[in-house]
Image (cartoon, rainbow, N blue to C red; front, side, top):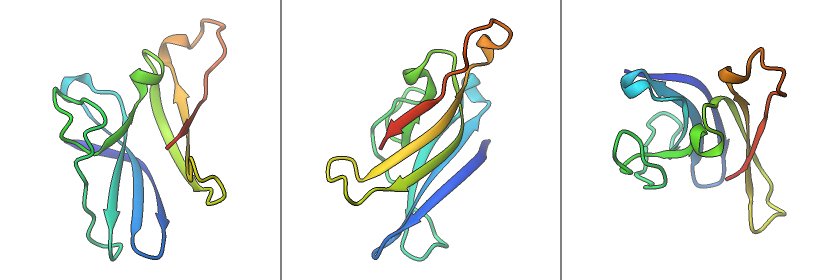
Length: 116
């Protein structure tokens, strides 16, 4: 069973783009950021991006896995903003990175900043 935490969409002249944080309890998977597109905002398509391996396959729409950023971390919350003036990185993704293993250790909490 897939669970949805939070979603953020951007609309342009041709379609809507959606980034969402999801997770499943299968294989103790941590939350991941996924991507979907829609022409009408009602029916969403999940393109097979092949960017991240999840459950032994890259045939998925996962764009960010927390453990590749920081071992033991958990992605919680995602915001995607459009920056049309930046030709190299026109989209920016910001997410909160929580590491439950650091709680009570005195180490500072880390926040993730990703360019997508």
